[in-house]
Amino acid sequence: MIAEAENVEAIRDFFTQWWSVDELHETAAKATLTILSLIKRHQITDAEVQELEELMQQYMMMIDTIKPFARKEGDV
View 1 (cartoon, rainbow, N blue to C red):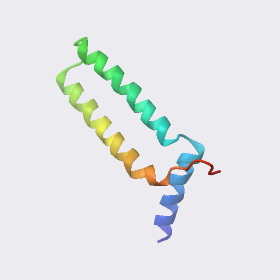
View 2 (cartoon, rainbow, N blue to C red; view 1 turned 180 degrees about the vertical axis):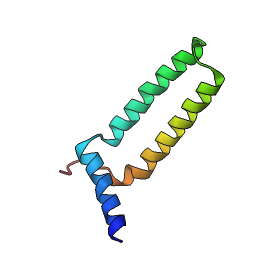
View 3 (cartoon, one colour; view 1 turned 90 degrees about the vertical axis):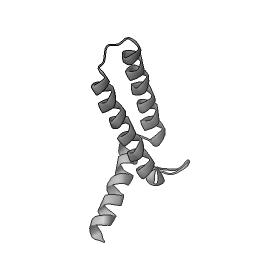
View 4 (cartoon, rainbow, N blue to C red; view 1 turned 30 degrees about the vertical axis):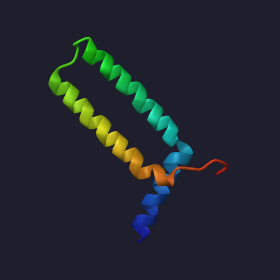
């Protein structure tokens, strides 16, 4: 129970001290555009594309998981 509370607090701290969910989504979008640009210019292998696709999927799953803990408008 204590470990779970500490995990929740760590997630809350992440959002209050680091980035908002919107900022995480913006970063993911920019990285995706860069990846797509590399793919279109054929400067990345199929294996590298697969690795980056998996990374982005994991990243988006992480955001969805921690989203309920994000600060709301007006929260301090």
